[in-house]
Image (cartoon, rainbow, N blue to C red; front, side, top):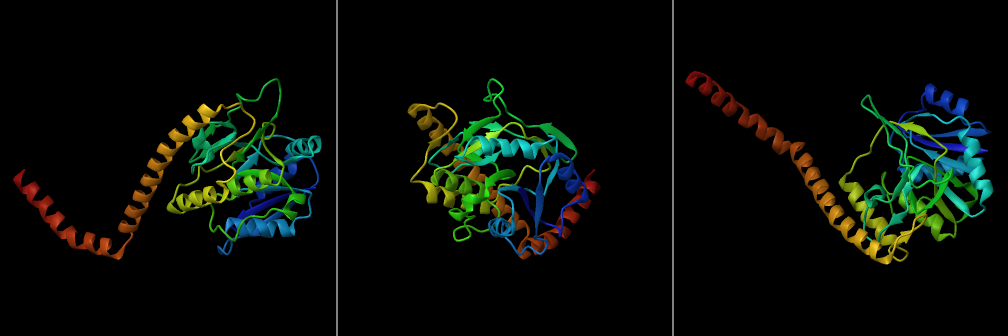
Length: 291
C-alpha cells in the first residue's frame, strides 16, 4: 500500500485533490493528512509524524499545493520501480544528478532531469526536462530530488528520519533525506512516468540560506556526488567554481532583500513615512503652482 503523506496548511486537503488521487493512483492507498493549520509543525516534524501514522510500505510525501496528477496508474508505476530494484530507496519526479561540495539548490547545479506542470497565477508551464532519459527508460539514478513529491521505502525509516535535531522550518528536508538514503547504501532516482501539476515556485529566504549552509556542513564528508550522468573531475571542479560564485551572489541578494523587508515593516519606518508625508504633499502642491 502507498501512504500519501501531506502536511496541510488547512485542516484537510481539498475534495478535488482527494478525488484526483483516488481516480489516478491505480493501487491500494491511504491518505495521511497532517493538520498544520495552527502552524504546530515544521516540515521535518510533520513528516516524522506522517511516518509514524502510515501503514503503507511505500511513503509518498507530497506538497499540499499539488493540484492534480495527470498520469493514470501513477501508483502502479511507482511500485514497479521499487519492485525491480531492491536497492532503490527513494524516487522523485525532478532533481539533480550532481551535488557539489558548496551550498546550492539542486536546480542551480544545471544537471537536472524531470519536472512537472507548473500553474502559478493562472499561467501554466510544462517544466519537464527529459533529455537524459534514453530508449524509453523511465528512471535515472540521481543525487537529490525535489521535495515537492518523493516516495521512500517505509523500511528505511528504521535507520533514517527527518532531522528535527538539526533543522527547523521548511527548507532542505529533501536534500538531507536524499543524502541519508544514499549514506544508508540505497539509490535515489528520478522517474519520468509520473506527471503532476503543482502551483508554486517556492521562495528564497534568509531561513533558506541558513538551512542550505547547514545541510552542506552536515554532509561535506561525502560531497561532491554524481549519479546517473558521466562527469569528469575537471567538469566537477569547474561547475563547483561557477556554482559558488552564483550562490554567493544569490545569498547576498536574499540577505539584502530580507533586510529591506524588515526595515519597511519596522515601526520606525512607518513613523518616518507618516512624518515625511506632509512634506511630500507640500512639494507636490508647490510644483502644481509653478506649473
